[in-house]
Image 1: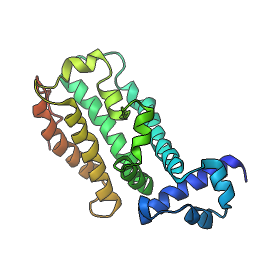
Image 2: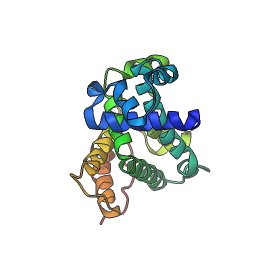
Image 3: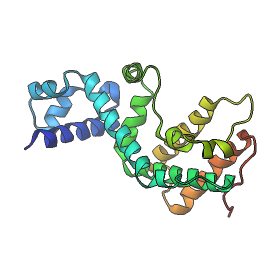
Image 4: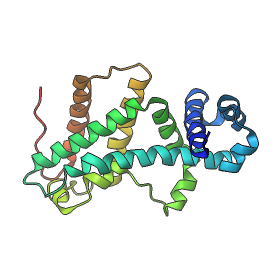
Amino acid sequence: MSSNTTKDRIIDTTMQLTSEVGLFGFSMKQVTNRVGVSESLLFKYYETKENLFLQCFLKVHGQIIELMESDIADNFQGGMNNGKEAVDAIHDAWVKYFNFLVENRYRTIFYFEYRDSSYISDFRRRRNGREELPLRKYIFSDKSRERFLKLKDGISSELFWVYLIDSTGIFAKRVIKGLSQHSAEHTEFLWRLMWRGLVGTFRDEPQLLAES
């Protein structure tokens, strides 16, 4: 078995285990038992539990960024003519992001648990206190979007992103845990629910997507 395949299994198994027992119920021994590798090899690859967690987080984070950089970024090329086009582009990005979270199940559970834990401080230190948020990067990254999606005076952009990113995670985790359905219709309902809560924060209040 190649080292890359072994590392992939370790990373994936770590996220499975933490989704079952939580970050603080996890031990390196659990990984070695499930994967069938020695503790010495595990520590050779990752050195500490904290570093193993960080590599798991970066794996999922990188996949989200890759998703955004593929076909989603293409939606924003060439500028936009009106606020409706900007909203449509955000809608498409959000649906891709939401479906990714739902489909990745235990990886998503790990991702948000780690992101909300004390372990994230190391990652933020490496980023000089900033956490790169893929939806932020691709929704408000050029002048054409900023032209149509300006927040009203006195509204914190940080709270805007807390609402959008964290609410999406909460809804995705409910679907993963079987507490909510996952269908195209339900996803659109969640989008409208979230967007109606967001639209009043914009100066020019861009047009909502077609309502049903």
